Length: 170
Length: 258
Image (cartoon, rainbow over all chains, first blue to last red; front, side):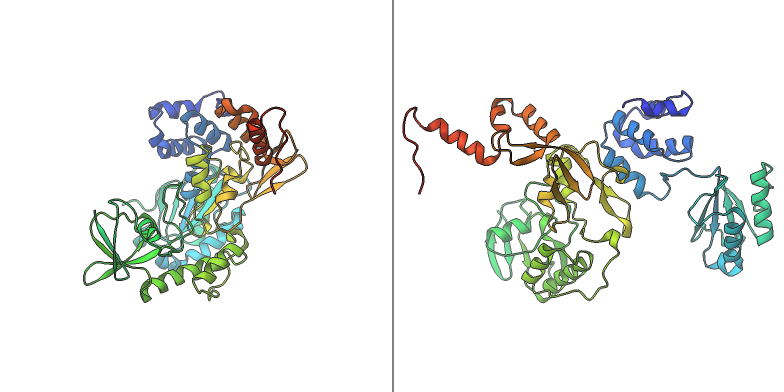
């Protein structure tokens, strides 16, 4: 079984590289999983099996960690992550309507990924930027003062590969 | 040697022993679910709560993992302690409404039912005591099962909720489960650890054919006890017969016990 996960990454032994990066220390399991998720976009099962085996940590423990933290995903994610704030302030300023519009436009359920694997949509309770309400975060970039129209336009541009300027700058 | 005062009476205690150990040794009964003498403490069931006197105020502590280091005073049967444990039991009953073992324990604690709504199917019948997870890791050394999820979605599961490659079918998890949720199912040729879905070939007693355990488990036993190899493949009954036969002098008439 050892090394079987290495084949899937276009010949590159990603798990091996990550293991070496942290000196193969069991205590560094979480940073390793974070790196793996960054490289792969999610945590593929065969990579986790490979990682557990080569690190000498029970697979059940790796699965425990992977399911405990909300930031880890066992299912493939879209190319872009949309985080929409639906906290009190954003909600009052229309985040609910934006959420509905995103859901319809890109056929994506909250917490899910669109059928074309373009977007993963996660409504969250607050991103701590109430002054920018309603605020949407796409791939760690903040877009403030959104309306249904500007939000959809921003996402369409990102999908088309021409991301709009960061409206929240300044 | 510290002294522990339980419900107004003084008892000697060993330094470092837990309140639960000292109490049980002196004839007090404290209900427990997640405690097992062969395993590390997790204090997850909260059923062994007792009231620790802090001089002027008191605190609820889990007696299973509270070590006695100096003279302490605890109350096991005070109104506060009893009602704290009752509250915990009511919550556990809501999780595990069908378990006869849990109902029996509740009855012993004079808890008749639960005012709480029953939980959903996915969380049903497991109190998350973690005994199965600990026995598999600490005693069997396989870690085939573990916790998954968090908060209300926490559960005990094999990795990816699929049959685990690490399971050897020893049945230790089923043996320690205090609410009878984990079960070993004996099929024609296979043994199944339910609800973890692992299935493996069954080993039967080489003399009488009684079902014994999973094949991987028996192989592990044979490897670990090479000296007693001819005994490992026998069920407890046949093992006893074999040992007894060794003591009977050759040619003597067997004594039939009455």
